[in-house]
Image 1 (tube, rainbow, N blue to C red):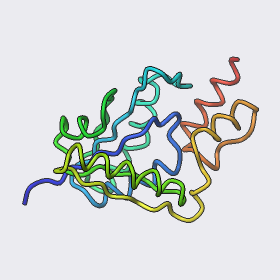
Image 2 (image 1 turned 90 degrees about the horizontal axis):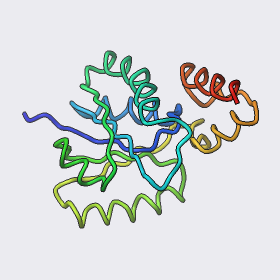
Image 3 (image 1 turned 30 degrees about the vertical axis):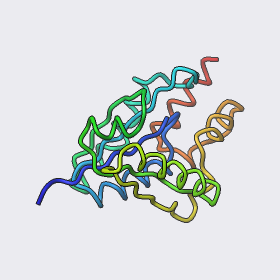
Length: 167
């Protein structure tokens, strides 16, 4: 049977427990998972692409070991369907927190399907207790000196503390 490859994209600025959950669930569902860090030149991220890739590697290494899924990370700056084609993904994985996410992801899936009909979209619903977590809120809380340990893995919380301790 051929290997099924999925691509999960995001800005991951920073990676959260929600991202970790989607990665773990996708890793149990596919043979190979490419976590694609979207770099958009119009946006100014908090962390550099290299820092975000390092955090993703820390987050994905134990998941790969536990699930046996081959997890890779990459950076892309164009259309997600082009990134999916480039890595040989048959599926784009997306996470849903709420109805607003569903409306957006349904439109995105339709557009991606029109651009790349050979690439399907699979949506993972957020597990209970994770739907309120967003990278934007995590950055805001950390910037104001709040404790983000309930929302991000320990290594990410440490990086945020160090970043804001030096500003």
